[in-house]
Image (cartoon, rainbow over the protein chains, first blue to last red):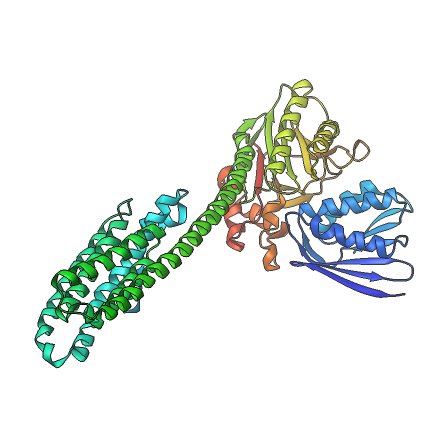
Length: 121
Length: 458
């Protein structure tokens, strides 16, 4: 089973790749809305409905910018994955200063084997 | 020429202001009535003389001698209308503005009625001109249907009375026909006027609601700005350091925070940024400021990491009580004689070394405030040695992310270059120049900008 969905809100685009063994969410563009959770939360609800079990990879490596309000919906997804014992990985570009600052702080949510935060050079 | 014509039709700035800003319907209505009276009088002093061509073409040959008289009627009424146009332009809208509508109606109707009398009374087809006047005045002017009804009836009565008294023999069927059409015109124009008037009221109420909503939003932003800027400390000299700071809140207030605190044991400098925008971010920033000052009053010798752990407890609880999704990046710095001790995840610390003239970056470590119940595991103290003349620049992402919407941010490297360039300047001047350089790079400020700069002077 493989299919792809694209969700867009302003300059933020989420590409969802449903693969047999995982769901990859590729973040593209810029997230700068005041309440991005209004767009992001329903997208993730749909992911949970379509594929309730496979690991989720949140790939931010191609994201150009996100404001501080975007961190909240990401933290919500981490908490949800932790509660439902669903594997979740966060990939970010470690040589991008703003990504390093934003995502390295998410390491506080690390749960080995369950929640991973990986800086990719 | 076109500009000249546009300016003639354009209402004065005062009327425009009232139309845009008034919260009072009567005042608003007077303003648009006054403005539209200009249009009515312009129509009047244009069409009344032009219709003289109709007089020349249609007047029966046996009445050709009436043309000079008709010319005088038209000239006199046009003169009155021009005078009225000038008065309307020179005066402000008032509760008496509607009288201009009555006067205009009277002047033009009188001219036409006199022409009907001259042309044989009720048998003259010139009564049709009165229908035009009734329609023009009552449909164009934004007044209530009662005014339309009174005005139209007045025109009708003027026509009937003048022609009964001064008119000649007439065919009663023509009179009935004329009255039928004129009465219908009065009724129809009053009805249309009523519908239009209701629409004007609805439009006004919608604009009023929109304006109220907009004002509420602006006042919320003003409150947020007040919160953010009210507690900023003055520049000062503490221990062996001079410290200065600049904060420029963005339109939507981004929740930047900084503080310069002199305690009994050592000076402290704080910088942070609350996620999100608006009043909620401002409130959390205020709580942060109060909590930190309270903790330092109790124990000013505390380590920065422990200060942030305690701060996190308070802020996490309060964020939960406020039921908002917010967190805070913060770096706490205690200033010793020759070194800084710092903790907390925020932006890099930029250090200018006076000996080498170079700027170094020192990453901040830790995690955000308000996300986890206990952050003690992630907060560690780090040391940084300073010599006389060395400077430290703290900043929020408002300056490095300038220009992100143009795909090229000001960034930390440009900030470092600017810092190096102005390092020898007095602190405030250096800060202002750095900000000026960033805004020259891209003049659009999307987020709060905060810079804190300190220099070791002893």
